[in-house]
Amino acid sequence: MRNKGRIVYSILCFLLFFLLPLSDSIKVYAATWGSVELTGESAVLMDADTGAILFSKNGEEKGYPASITKVLTALVVLDHCNLDEKVSFSHDAVYNVDAGSSNAQIEAGDVLTVNDCLHALLLKSANESANALAEHVAGSREAFAEMMNDKAKELGCTGSHFDNPSGLFSENHYTTAKDMALIAVAAFHNEKFLDIEKNLRHTLNGLQRLPEGNTIYMEHKMMLPDSRFYDKRVVAGKTGFTKNSGNTLLTLAKEGDRRLVTVVLGDKTPYHYIDTKALLDLGFLETEQQELEDSANYLERIRLEAVKQGYITAEDKLHFSGKVLLSLPKEASQEGLEFQFLLPKTEETEDTSADDMTANEESPTTGADASVSSGSSIRRLKENALPELVFLLDGRMVGKASLYKEQNIRVMFEEASPKTKAAFFAVTISGVTVIIAILAFLFGGGALYGAKNIVDERKRRKKWKERRKKRLEEMKISEEEFRKLMEERKKRKKH
Image 1 (cartoon, rainbow, N blue to C red):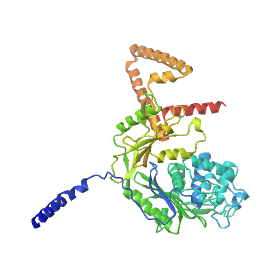
Image 2 (image 1 turned 90 degrees about the vertical axis):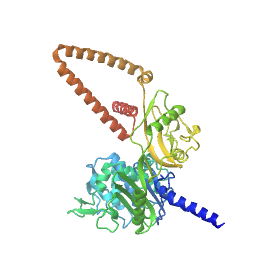
Image 3 (image 1 turned 180 degrees about the vertical axis):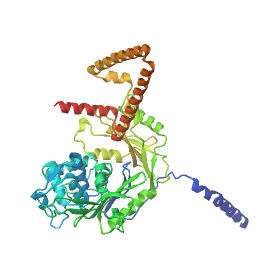
Image 4 (image 1 turned 135 degrees about the vertical axis):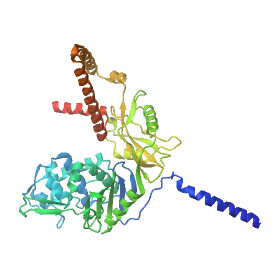
């Protein structure tokens, strides 16, 4: 018995000695997501480039945003105003705020530029500036609040309702950490917003109360080098506080090419900063972006499914609009990655709520070849529209991609209107004429000069096409969608 025991012991020692070193070289296949303990009632960490939620604590529970509301206010203003427009401060804008709430010493009758007002709004959290901007854009705070809600829906928010431009407490003014993260991502992609937020101080001139000027300062302490909460990764953000909401904090951070946003709601002083740092550490240190592996294979599978679902014809070719990035735990494998169509609003379902899209996104198909939404949820898309694509790993959304289709000439010609076909023939005839003229010119003694012009023209056209393609990829629309947009703009100008 003793000998048997020694043999078993020796085998175990052998296995441990030789196999344990191999464990470090084995790639992690399970996507093990990190976690963190937070004080705040709810919080979300989101990748600004993939839309993936890297961490959530009660992320879809109702909460009160307080002054981080002003990020959405700024986005609506930037959508509708030039920075040099003049804003007049009415008596109502200045005094219809809670006593003791944030202000920038602006008085009724003062006139500031939109740029000044946005600095007061985002750095000093001036409530009178929020009111004045709302009146300038929409005529009233109530009308502006409707614009805020429209913008929130456009960004994918499903659990929010905004009642005022400042964030002062109202039972009808609420949001979720996830919705505010979507708003933060939109802010991260707005260059004018970032240009304002990078200024840690700004002087307002021409004030009646302070004719020498009033210098206002950034209040987000993670952006202040002399603060104990300073974090060099933080590039923008907004603070908020009311008695009912507690501390709220929205933060935009960047390290290398990676961009993350965090939102904490219902936090305590100073834990809204401590919680935010913990979230950023989790995101930057424990997760990474990976480019989609074997993208050609995925694209073919997507194309076949798109044909099956009737989004495209068998002759259409599909392309990703840009590089496809996924947010995953560090060193995680992409094995088991699935894709799913995220259906946009259709002509036949104009009143379809954003909940339909969310439900479709959060309920991935399962099975051996689980890759797309179920056939029962397929709805007719608008002409030439393609559904957005989401990638999921273990049922969790880790990235998105936009698609565009490349039609062959025969299909394009068959679908063209009679007017377009006539134009096509006219262009063809003109093209033949041009070719004949070029040949005559070449054989007439200007061969070298003409050849050089042709080469230069080809280069110019190629460069123009590449620049146009890159621009369309940045806009995340296809060539056909862009043409349709331009046609609609021409029609509106005629009317």
